[in-house]
Image (cartoon, rainbow, N blue to C red; front, side, top):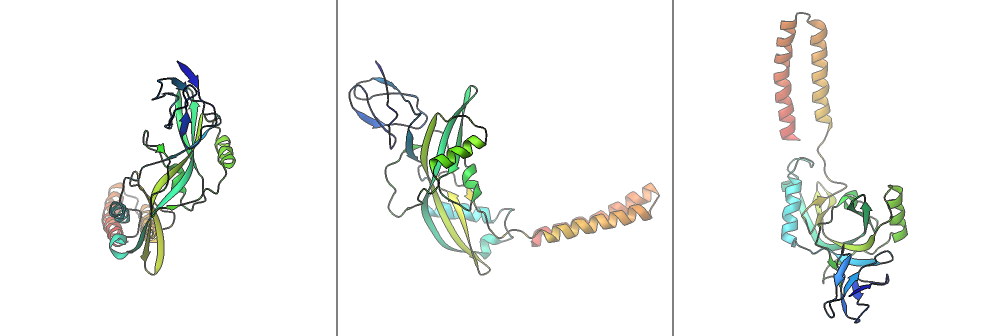
Length: 258
């Protein structure tokens, strides 16, 4: 027996049109079976905004370790992991709008922030398939960031990118850890995706670029002078080789120090 769900489903729940039984509506489902009467239902999501969440898989210590690994990477200033001091690690829940769009024979998922943020990477996150679960309530001690960007605004962004009308729209709560740390008298902030461990930050102590530009400029200057002053090909090649060795050593020293 097949029925059709009305488009008024809310909070990722549904009511069976045959027996009135209630159940959870998982994200991405187009057909489901009522566990009370075994009726197969087609889910009409055209006017539904479901509410889901991603599970928080990382505890605070694991989030701290993820931030330390990021600090020890190539993007941040040298020894940031050992020279900085953690001030706080706070659990937060950040809202995003999820849109499922049919493209050709497949389906694409797009997300847009549902609240203002200074971290643009939040808009580029890929939601793990199959992990969304119906939203109930935030755990104790988790700061819920309120939605400040209307759904219609997010839909207009989707249309501006040339995507079609979404077949599913949902509000999804992303579990994050907000790490506050200090370095040389300034306080910075990094976000950790509590479902994948990815670290995001818009402002952080970056490696200084000027020493690298100076080394590159010095190399160009020396090679240009040698190229103009020396005409014999063999001697010119030897001069280039002799010049390149100290330049490489200087670049290695800069990389180790910066």
